[in-house]
Image 1: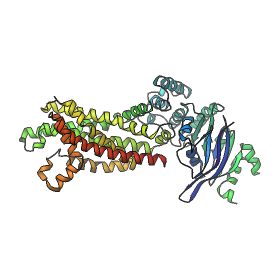
Image 2: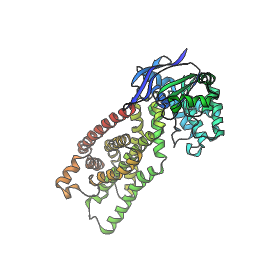
Image 3: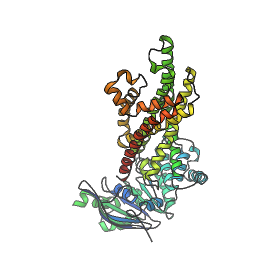
Image 4: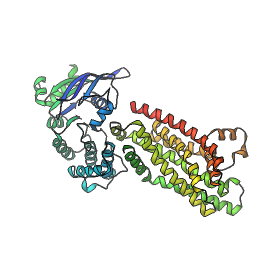
Length: 243
Length: 242
């Protein structure tokens, strides 16, 4: 069964087409990565699927709910960890988690217990009372992802989750993402090719709003006729794709 | 439930900012103390400085900072990705508006109460404290609505620039520092066309036990508050859709 079915999804801003007639199906419980250079349309796709931006045309079904006809139904099924670290700066780690749990409908007690469990899972328990400003970039990003997971979403969007993190923090975050595979459908956007290769079941490469390749990393390399994934990516995007 | 959770978060965001205590509570009390010291030294040269007139003016002055707190929370959320996270959640527009307004209403009433109770030290009779606080509810909503509108329309930096102009205009036109009738003419007409002088008059009358006479002034302020809220809600919904 597909968790996401996208048909003809298009977004144009002032005459510029950011996403151009995207058609895509993503199976339930899979981790799908969207790769592409800056401005390829990755974040715009995420924003449309999260009902944050209305498409110019086309539609998408998330677990059977249309982003056009039932955005409230879609919002109840999904959660997102935005590109920037999206946390409330004057709340503690625990309070941030409890807030999101309650916003997604949990009662006070359940929210408290779930927040405790999330802090244990994400090794944040010893920082429970601290505000995000006191945490390192990697821990803040971990908190941001924990906040996205606390509602047990059926579809999780991770928009550039490791952007700006050092190698150790990035690898650490990968472990947490890998542990989620199979439990929910995950859409990951990233600039790091090795991240997509290491984590994804399937990868879509976007170029100028269009899907220029789709498949596993191996399939994409093979179809491109290049030696490795980086070369395949370069040949499928920007100047490479124009040649 | 969602509204309560979001309100609690906003209450914490505002109350944990040291500026809330400094501007919302300490500054009005300090001004009360200074004016009391001045009138004690040189006599009651200005009737507006009599404690029964000046304390309600300072209570309304303290509420102007509610506008700042409200706008800073909204514009701060807009500037960060936090609002994007919330917009992707099941929260609706009404829950955002209530969630931003309820904590500001509570903080505004606490500020006004602290200001009036502090004024008791300078001779203010607190027999009608409760009616006076009730008379200030439309004023809190007025400034909360202004804050919501500013926070939705402007960036946090722009809000910081606009705020001093608004606070000075609101205080000058409120009759806190001098009776508007002393200048009269167009100034008085503009002052009473706007809600600020009505806000001060309503709390003065309620504090003196003339609550019935305060009602028309409260009604005037409520009209402005409703208009500002309608505009803020319209703009917020528009930004949500965008």
